[in-house]
Image 1 (cartoon, rainbow, N blue to C red):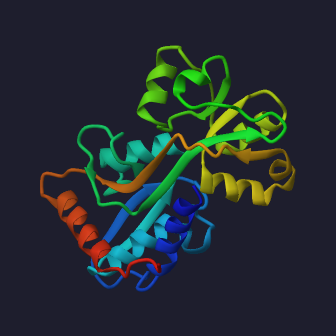
Image 2: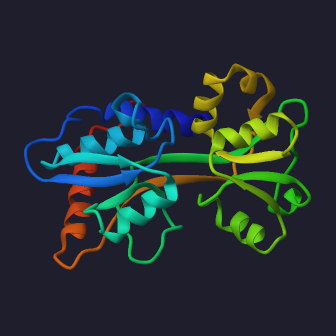
Length: 241
């Protein structure tokens, strides 16, 4: 888990060169408030935004990001009704048909927040049965976890944001909450009471790669943008060892 955090932060910092888009076509993407990866008021609009902007700049494109609630961001990014070219960041392997997936722009260590005073103990998903687990509505977790939740084998409680899950967990209304480890760090650093009460479970649910999902278009723009981003990603310097 620690290594995954280092990878994500190193990628964003090492790839910040050229982050301002060059003259040329502006790529319009939707995203969500998901600090530290993406956010309107974050430095460079977040770690993932910094990587995408730098990679596009390397091939002559600028970037405009419209921040929206996740479900609306996903819908508008792909329906083309307002001229968007796609949506990010999205997990690979969990995308709907018709999404043109870029190469990886980062890594997301997904796991469980738990109370320090009452940690969970699990090795397989079967061990989670009987626990009250907070999730964010509309977010994809792991395929196995989501399948068991949909079948009613796991007791999940959906809310609209990670911070609410953490507050419910700290108050004893949940036994665990699914959350990205970097998101957990960001939120709990800003809320010392939660930092004191909660921690990340050492066993990750899954380590996922993050991507841009481009909208397929009849004129080939979506595919061209995916290829441009991939070329730009390959041109960026690797993270330090």
